[in-house]
Length: 304
Image 1 (cartoon, one colour):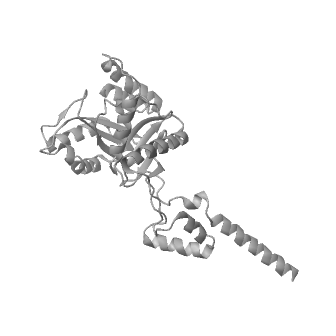
Image 2: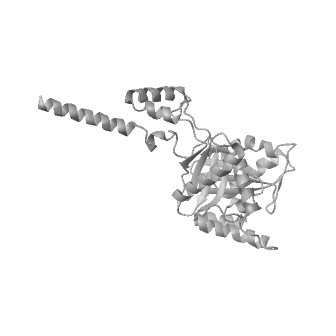
């Protein structure tokens, strides 16, 4: 009888531990989804210098501050409309919580997707913030416009913020096929603009920089012959960032004015009559901070 009582008590303690482990902790509140940048996502690539954790924290602070200005506060609700307090009450009962989670999964997801979600980018010194229900290019431009105007420094480790409004497989034929449609709103007749192409590849050796740029330029020319390359003060910049097997693309304005979307440089006062020298020096400085492949850096210098 004593042995049976001890076993019963042990089983009871195990159930309590399992219940506590399952209950409302930080891990259980996290949205379950992909943890790495994938084709089909939209968001923001953020580069930093050897401190990705602090960069992620700064990015969330900066993005949430300006997203609330543009879109208002984020409203958080589970898929079934229950509040967090109701959820914690339900999760006091393990069986009820399991049943609820199964129902949520069947409804299309365990948790509601957040406005911003940090994922692994696939490259060192680069984080990817996946966005939900907002325009990342509009948000990043809004941030840089404010920083450029106010000259207020709001981050220490973030270097560049590059919107990602489209993604495809990082093979030349896939990129050209995808960009044929993706670039139409800006460059297809009757639309036209002066432009430049900012290309960079990380952890990807199968794409030749010069070949990719030439193929994209040819594609833009076919959309409208009036589109002209301008490396000094283009109206639009086509950003192409390849990381492993994913190609991230966007079309942005004011790329040279906002110092290649570098949040550290954009808050600095520009020296008069020294724009040309600054533009030549800046790529080198950025590459040193982001610590890219040496061969890739040399190619970018020659291109600039």
